[in-house]
Amino acid sequence: MRKVVSRDGTTIAYRSTGDGPPIVLMNGAFRDHTIFDPLVPELAPRCTTYVYDRRGRGQSGDSPEYAVEREIEDLAAVIDEAGGQAVVFAGSTGANLALEAALAGVPITKLALHEPYFRTAPHPKPPADCMDTLRALLADGRRGEAAEYWLSELLGLSSEVIADWRQAPLWATNEANAHTLLYDTTILGDFDVPAERLAILRTPTLVVNSDATGDWLRDAARTTATALPNGWGMQLPGSWHRIDTDILGRVLAGFATT
Image (tube, rainbow, N blue to C red; front, side, top):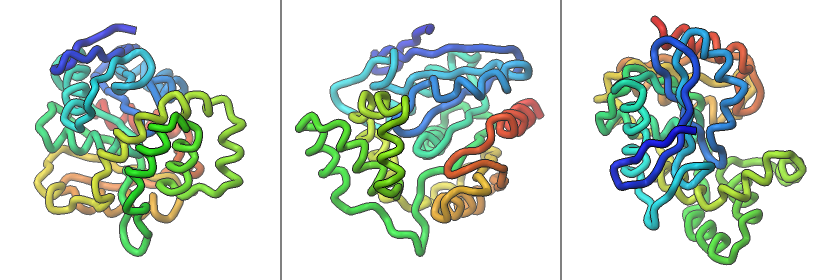
């Protein structure tokens, strides 16, 4: 992977593939750039596709103290490598970060968001002490328990589903990146859709959700799209918190090139 140095001196690893207008893909909680391995071939024939490891993950560096502003600067550094402006696609907690970056003035020409992480009424918010619990688990080196806690209390997965996750090949990545759950939870703030702030964002924004996702994720996507002056929603075939890759690829390629 190539490297770019972010504003605070942290090295960010990225890769570019394909030809056409630039699109930067940004992952959500737990993941690194490899989560987009199936999607990149769908986009590369029509877009120059950039993927990168968010700080603290994969081949990227990290800093002693976390701040959302540093992650915004990381995205800006990757966009600068892409020519100074780009379309950005981000999912889950990454979608929240992409919105913050756009609000901060990062040169994003268009945004595509997959099920941003917000909680809207009547869906309950995570526990008020979730950050304290995560910090305590991680301080004790209980990375697997921290990952389980986040999946249970912040994503709402059942113990049976989490048990299945633990048997999957990606569980090792979940534990390796468990410390970054503090980063993503910081990004989420109070978990509310910041409607007043979003009302000033003029960036054209597509907000997509799966037709088989959870009710709270669907409602968050719809509320986000409604709050954005140039936002619109789209429901696509998929499963829980996931859209079929070939369909998503076609939609994103069309969005980025028109």
